[in-house]
Image (cartoon, rainbow, N blue to C red):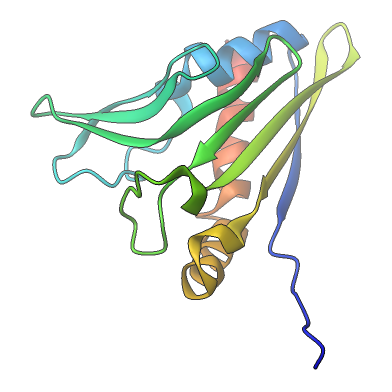
Length: 162
């Protein structure tokens, strides 16, 4: 018996008109400024999206009612070159506390010149969510407007203008 696997890795790039250090700070310290407010999983409307700037830090949302809802953890924090985070939100758009069931995304910030940064984005290991969830997440993340492409374009706009 042979098994076929499908690569469910989402890879995207975006160019930011800003120095690498600035682009990294906007990704981490100003996460709420560019993350789409409609992209949340908590029961309350989202007040703020947060990345704690350290390995082991939380990736989460705070609701307008003060509630908090985890999304994942910071696995690698290497300013200003890269950040890797676990994504523990399944295809049902709920947090799974078991890190073994989570995928991860890596963001690399590559200096092109003193005022231009190439941002390479990779969301991988979607199969850890289970076959059905992996397909659902891949479809959502690959969507040009509502997926990672649209999110990265929003990030690039904020990073380039500020």
